[in-house]
Amino acid sequence: MAVYVLDHYYLAITVLVTTAYQLLGFAIAWTFQFDKITDFTGGSNFFILALLTLLIGNEFHARNIVASVLVMAWATRIAGFLLFRVLKTGSDNRFDEIRSNFFKFLGFWIGQIVWVWTVSLPVTILNSPAISDTTRSGSNPAFGTSRDIAGVILWALGWLIETISDAQKFRYKSAKGNPKDKPIQTGLWEWSRHPPYFGEIMCWWGIWILCLPPTTNGSLPSSSKSAQYGAIVSPLFTLILLMFGSGVPTAEKPQAKKFFLMSYGDNAKQEHARAWSNYKEYLRKTSILIPIPPFIYKPLPQILKQTLLLDFPMYRFDEGRDGAAAIEESRKSFV
Image (tube, rainbow, N blue to C red; front, side):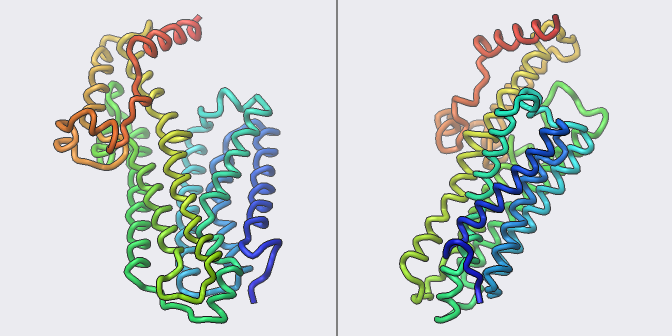
């Protein structure tokens, strides 16, 4: 029998577990002022929620097992990779400006609570008594419908894209001799400026599709079906977060700033004179998110790139405004 914990959908218990785990991580990171466990705590939290809800839900149908295992596989990969990366680099410069500020640093961890809990909703609800009790008393549709297969394939493609592109970039940055005046343009990075983000978005759309109620199961009450369809907030939140929050916006302008200063900053070197022109050419031929061959993407109209292909004007580094601010900031830091 499923274990009822606070509510029928496991929403409260997963909030409490996530909050406790993240605040413990915050306490350790704040006390010792280091970044070694920050991303690991976020990624591993997904594993904990998937395993916890599967076990206490006590519903081991194929759909529950497959969905939970896929979430745990995604969590293991991302938590392991991010831990390995930070151990190699020693620190994460994303936290340089907030690590010593209690409330700003706490704000990041609170955001991580919201991220983990929201994105985990499809598998949380699938494993909950609201769904399992109905399938136990009624019919349990066989796993393997065309929609199930589509969800698994979408997750698998996303997982491969995310895994391969992360490995390609890490290998590129670790290798000696790569040109410093050009961004990475090898492997999947030749077709997309942010392939790991694209892969992550695909993974969570796949999980949501996999966790939807089978169309042949007429025994589910409308409230349970609504909860499963409502879990679409998971892939939507992932898309919005990566496109407008801690993903693309935090990567695009800082990278543009780096190449601009290589060419025009006070410490610019002659061998990096073409860094900014190289970067602008890279922007023209490389899709921001959806992998597209450069020979197809480059000639496309700018209006199409900035709308349907998501390369919004907000990501652009303005040479006049942003460039002047970057030069002034570099002068102050130099002094």
